[in-house]
Image (tube, rainbow, N blue to C red; front, side, top):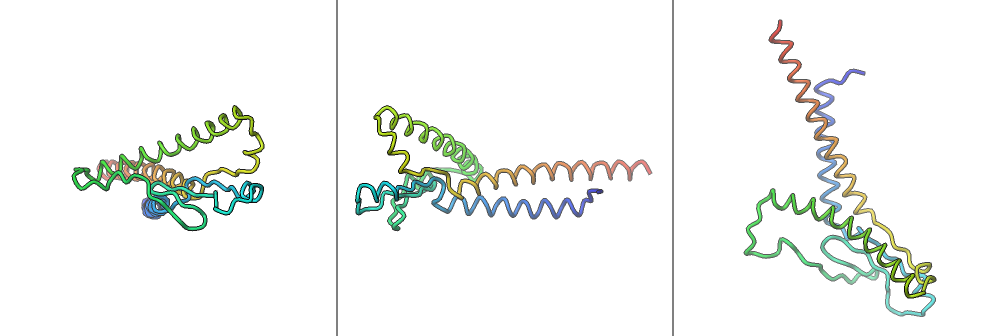
Length: 165
């Protein structure tokens, strides 16, 4: 199968749009980290919902009430350029991923030290679909960049062939 410049251009356009769409959806939704405590609520006859889901900007209970987290771009005095915002977004994605992994390990260790091993059996802690979309955005962005490099190489080879004729 021969790769054409038109086919590669279509691939770059579609994957670029897909990457951007995934990132926008991931950043705007609150399902990066999910805690399902429904079993614990039934066991303890708890009237309030203990289950929650978190995003980059806020944490919500499954019943609907949400509270905002710190907004890094909220200060009017901050002089942040678009490239700085993009860099902060990438750092946020990496930081959230590391934080979630560390939090889960620390929580398990704390429960183990407290001797309440059955508490973890009643909690379901996992990553949400927003984090999956963020990583899909990253992968599609990398594929788009590689396709751009391949397209540039193809154009360069075509120019060299045209000059030699």
